Length: 381
Image (cartoon, rainbow, N blue to C red; front, top):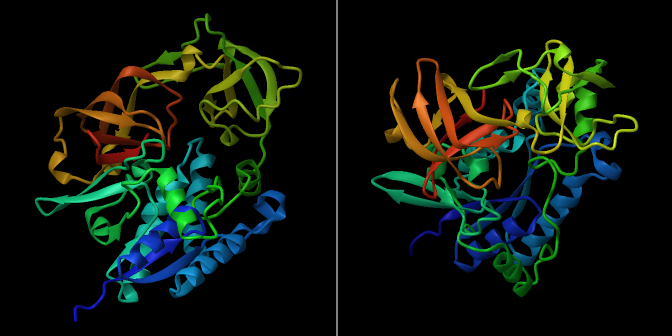
């Protein structure tokens, strides 16, 4: 008799991973549920709740319903070193990090995957809405069929070796179909709301998180008019403002607490105007804002990625210096794919968009696609 494949499911305590475990169990695989404990600092969570305990209890009850083994792995040390410290450094430098992408690259598909393989697992399975295929001995990562839930962007830093050992059993399903499977199988997570917190951490208040990690430093908030001659120095990639270009309208507690495009949290007394962050000068501790979501300072046609930071999931598409290619690009989760030209320079990959993009933030990731297939990615410089 052929031995059953052993598949370890990364259970989060949510409906998606619960349905993954259910599908695999029904298909006859040897299924084990494994929950990651990544964070246990209750002082930074909303309402003083402890999300990892609540979520792990949901995961445990699902495993009891399915009659499969359940375990918890404590990765809090690795999570602090690889994700929390990374976030702190990025914000300190005025960048906008994406912890979910790094969590997948450094924790879920590295530390967690290696631990699962040490337990003689053949594969790990996750509840991501994306699709894995294979062609010419190469694995492809494609967008999930549910375009509103597609999570391929969050996996844009995955590599071939990792992709070989991962499966995505719900990538071909719509979210409502996943909910229906959960209800039909009476899963306790069938009506549980999706998590809105940091990757595998829970309902953490990001401002509180940052205030506990970064020092307060009072600085000026400068408003830049749409009609002012606001450019101190302008390149194709960025606009640098000068204090004298605008008017001081308030103060902040540190420019590293703000990101491009942010509206909430400015706390400008008496202001009813829709003000948005258009630049944060960390060196001089100034936050520049503009009125209206269509302020010209919010839009850019170009971005660049350091050559050493570029990640190609499909190496055959790598560009040599001077070469260019057309791709579909996104700079944030759920953003519709945008037409752009990628050109490789000596030190940077330059991405030029057909249409100017709103709120491009340094530190975020740009990911490029060929049709539905993810080709490569990198952090915006």
